[in-house]
Length: 375
Image (cartoon, rainbow, N blue to C red):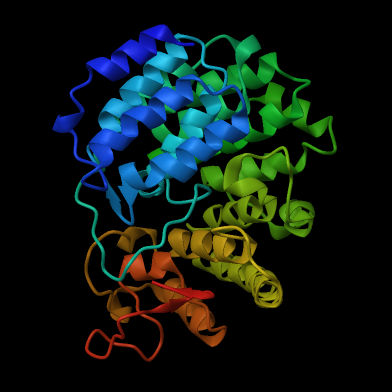
């Protein structure tokens, strides 16, 4: 199967692309050839995440060998590979840190170390974006999936994309999953770009007519930066998960939390009230987290805490410097006090230059305890 891709694998000068091990240049080509002969999705997942991953990424490092790997993935997609979405998911996992740096909420959180500063994207990130644009960026509404809309917001956030997403919603009025993900994507583009594009009346009417979609008006408005009330989002805050949502690993409570916070960022009084409403929910989730055995990399409580602190301390992320509390505004200090009182610390706080209470750079231990593991 996939003869053109197999030929490409043979033509690539693998010795020019170092990987995670000295043997990577010999081991990666056979893995890709096996991928060409695989017919089951489980086998594809095993090859990518079981055999390939450590050759292309270890810890914070993405190796140059990812470049020809992306070339092979591109060729496979051109030959109609059956599991192209799995290839995209694998690359998105490899570039978790780059994605989170560009879109610091609702995407997979990152285990940052204290004061770490990212100077430039990892090797191959531009090629990854090109791969996604070539194979997942669609203009034909009938072929659109939530995945397409997700990658648009994550990798190509631009004001004109919001209008395109609105057109997609209007053309898919009976596809609730696509509508929900599209609304979040459009709102997230507003957040990342600083735009505030209002919902068209036609879409507002569409959402109002469906009880399951009506709360997403407040989701869109909040993440876009328009003021919202907790009552408008309470149904989603109580729901915890919505399997139709691709954002935040389907944790709709995280989406609603983000909307409530962002929607009130411009008013200190409203933001403080929003935090007062969210902290009891966060503390409840923290208690559940401590009682349950965890299987996900970032289950609900850490995900919620990471997004909350990414929003509140966004202007300090990735500075590579210690954050002096005197640099915080009144509400940020209030939030930090509540976090310390609840014994909550996050990777986003480390990234912003905040150490756990009682720890200073002078007495910082080798390992900092965050959640139920250390880094």
